[in-house]
Length: 240
Image (cartoon, rainbow, N blue to C red; front, side, top):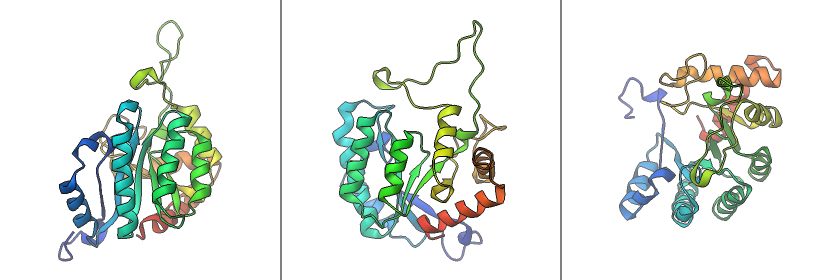
């Protein structure tokens, strides 16, 4: 990231503590995130947030405390907030919304990474924060797996407490078709969620056009229009 590097003008970074690692947030972690967050090549704080798919509600207080601290730090440093939100239920969506409303001004840039919750929640978010964008990864290119022998479709993933996650091709289509193009971002979750036809391989930025192609298909738009709109959204959120 130093100016003397031949690739410095092509690289930026974000820094934060993922909710899976909320136990690691302490004074030392905050100082490190604050120091690196002030670096000129740092464009965001996160991904940070709330995950009640892989964690149960007994961890809610801890996750919310760590999320709120990083959201406030993003505002203080003038950096985009990158949110990991795997909320699963309307109750948890309301919880996430309250944290954001308490900590983040309406004009602050926000990236909701790898969105998979309800369309209603996404619409609440974009209505409240004009510079918020909803991110989609290679997961939206995944086709539902063929039924196993016997004709029953493969079950959806279940998290802590047996809660079934809103997921799958139909849900992704509903989200993409139900949101304005100008409020979307295309992204990887590298090394995960490599888009079709490379599913299962290592995801990298060279794959994001596959995400754009799926959006173009579902919104019945030219690919060039999707690429132009999502490029502009990158400027809005990250200033790049």
